[in-house]
Image (tube, rainbow, N blue to C red; front, top):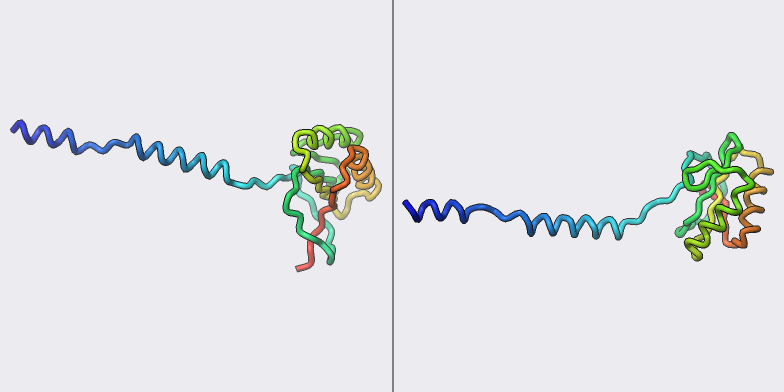
Amino acid sequence: MRKHAHTEEEAEINMTPMLDIVFIMLIFFIVTASFVKEAGVEINRPDASTAVKQDKANIMIAVTQKNEVWIQRRRVDVRAVRANVERLRAENPQGSVVIQADKDSKSGLVMEVVDAVRQANVLDYVVATKGAQ
């Protein structure tokens, strides 16, 4: 009888090592995942036959159809674009700026945004378009 009771206790599975492995895998996937940065609004970009894919875009600026400027999911005034770009560029000096202008937005506002980006001493900016498929 005594031998039988002893074997039941040993039959339990220790879950601690498996949980440790699951947490380590979770941390690995979070660290290695690449996240897509977005300006925070849906933009209908114009077509361009000479479009080139931009891989590393860290500062996203969107100009909507309603002529609103968005940076990092926040609506900002066009006069605050320069300060926001300077702050974001200080956080990531290698980051490039992508301006996503809706095809129905005012070109004057887009040029104000471009001018603000240039005043922030950022010369490696691009204007996003839809490439030819």
